[in-house]
Image (cartoon, rainbow, N blue to C red; front, side, top):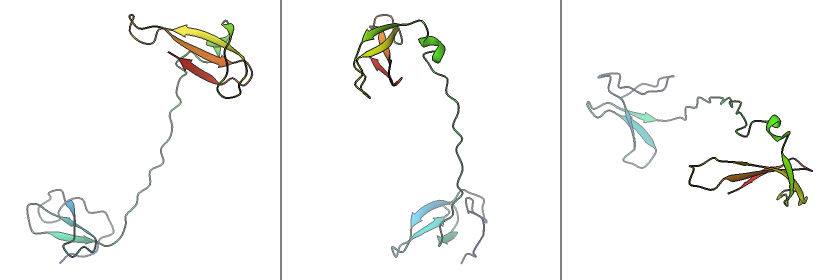
Length: 116
């Protein structure tokens, strides 16, 4: 009924409508089919087209390393290394009627975490 093609089928070669995927009636795999005309094409092999995703450089929402230069220390236990001192700053990140969030940076391992 249909001939093998080397490109991925996405549109019907007869009426140009988009092809849909369905299970074969015998339970032996998948097929492309057209809703408008009787075109059917059995899917016999997997077609893969890997796309490499490049990660964006994300800005530090706290202002980077410069934001931690003039902050105070407090006694807070780091969840990563259990050190007892950390730098801290408070920032209003939600609406004005919500409490401020406190951000911490461990003095020993530089791990960052947030409370509130």
